[in-house]
Length: 174
Image 1 (cartoon, rainbow, N blue to C red):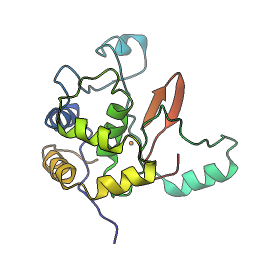
Image 2: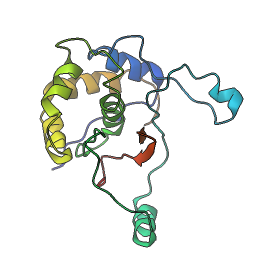
Image 3: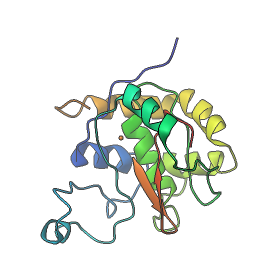
Image 4: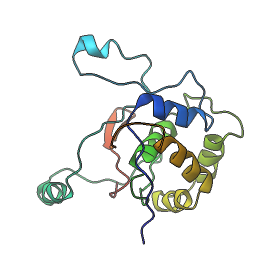
């Protein structure tokens, strides 16, 4: 049976409380982006270290598109922190893990904090090993559970590293 968590609400307040409680400093935070017009982008606090995109998932259309796609699938660069998602409904948490994991050189995690320990322990693992580690991680599961009940809505990710755009969804291969 596949492990499933409650979905994490795509709400900056929920996501911020979640990551701050796990060792991310409070000067790092998520915010809503209301559009891609210059005026709306000017409202986004700087610097931007990551962007999480949310959109409906349609696996049948995605499998059709991937069958006809000419997009080249590459092995992830060692510079890209990526974990496969094997826990159902953990996409918000995995998105946060990807965002933070690809910005650790810019974020000073609390020494000995959950995320400090997590990234040190998983740094040399491959994406499948990281997924297995996360699946068994009770501390993260408990933190996720608390955050998932903090919001009030229903509950995806792209990552730019070294000027390359990656669609990072733990449900699929990189």
